[in-house]
Image 1 (tube, helix red, strand yellow):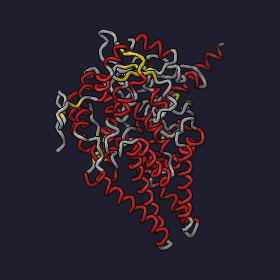
Image 2 (cartoon, rainbow, N blue to C red; image 1 turned 45 degrees about the horizontal axis):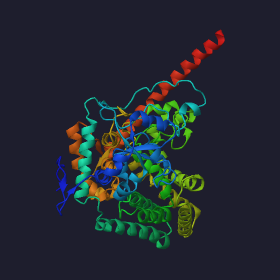
Image 3 (cartoon, rainbow, N blue to C red; image 1 turned 90 degrees about the vertical axis):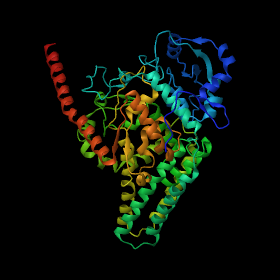
Image 4 (tube, rainbow, N blue to C red; image 1 turned 60 degrees about the vertical axis):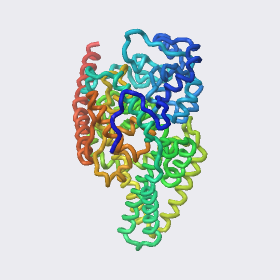
Length: 526
C-alpha cells in the first residue's frame, strides 16, 4: 500500500535520528556563518537585481550566481528565471542533495530578511524588466500596444494559502526521502531493458532477414518507432539523474542511449527540459509550448510574444494565423513530422549554442547513429521501401510527441498570482495526468504521472504511481484541481482546447481590419 499522508512532525529514521529537510540541515551547519552574513531586504534585493546581479533566494540565503550561470549543467536559463525569487523548492527538487547541501551555500552573499507583514511571497521582481532578458516591446516590428487576450485560462486563487501548501509539499518531500523513494530499484528496469533489446532485435531481424515486401518494412518502421519512444523514456530518467543519482554517469549513459541509438542530443534536451520544469506553461519562457507558427495554446500568442528561450519574436503573421486557425485539425498530421524538428534542434544546439558542455562527444555519437542507421537502411532493396521504412519510423514517433504535449497543451498558461504562487500550486495548475491500467504503464513510460514528475523530477518513474495518491490528497486538502484524463479523453480535451483558441483567430483578424480601417481614416483626415 502507498505510504500515508505525511504527519506535521519530523519523521524518525531507522537509526533514531530525525530526518530534516536538506536545506534545514544546511542552515544548522552554517548557523554561525549565516549570522555573519549581511541582511538583504526585498528593496535591496530588487536594487541589486536591477544592477545586474543574479540573486536567488535559497532557504533564506541570498545566493549570487553570476559566476555559475555560464557553467550551470542545467543551462543558464534555469538560473535566470529564478533571479529575484525564492527558489528553494525548485532548487531542491531539481538537484541532488549533495549539491543543495554542499555547493549552494558557497554562493551565499547575504541572508534574506523579508518585510514584516508582507505575507507569503515567491517572486520579488515580478513587476521588473530584468536586465538580462530582452523586452518583447523592443523586438517587435512596431511598438503599438497589442490587444488584450480574448480570454484567459487562469484560475482563481483567493481561497489558496500558498504558505500552507508549500509547507505540506515540503513535508511530503521529507517523507519520500525518509522512506527511500529516491533510491532507484534497478530491478524495475529489467523488463524495460528486455523490451528495448527485443524491439531492436525485431527491427534488425525484419530488415536483415525478413522477406522483401512492403509489410516487412512497415512492421520494421513501427518497431523502430516504438523503440525510439521507449528509449526516450529511459533517456528522460537519465537526464533527471533518476537512475544512479550521479550526474556525470547518468548523463553520459543518456548520451549513449539517445544520441547513439536515437540520433537526438541529450544536451539540447536538458537545456530545453530544465527550462520547461522551471517555468512550466509560461507563454514567454517555456519552449515546450512555443510552437509558432503551427500551434498556439493561448490567445496571448496572438500578440507576437518574445521568447526568452529562442531569443526572438514569435510572430503571429499570416502563416501563423492560417496554421493556428486549423491547429485542431492539423495537430496529428504535424505531430507526424515532429521528430524531424528534433533532429534540426539537436544539430542547431550542437553547432551554434553558446552552452554545449558535451558538444564533441554528442556530435560524435550522433554521427555514429547516422552511420549504423544508414548501414541498416542500405540493406533494404529498393528506394521505395527505404523511403517507406524511414517515413514510418519517424512518423509513428508522433505517439511520443502526443504523449508529451497532452500533459500541458490544454492546461493553464496564466498564473492567478505570479508574485505569490508557490512551486507546488504552479506545477499542479499547469500539468495533467493520464489514466491508464497498470499493465499499460510501459507504454506511457512515466509520462502518465506528469504532475508527480513535475513535483519530484528526480524520483524514479516506477515509484510515481505510489506517490500519486499522496499528491491527490494534498490537492484535495488545499482545494487545488488535480486534472487527469484517460489517454483518449485527454486527446479529446486537448483538441477542444486547441479548437477554442483557433476559433478566436477570425475575431482577431476582424479586430486588425477594424484597427487598419480606423488608421486609414485618421491618415486621410490628416
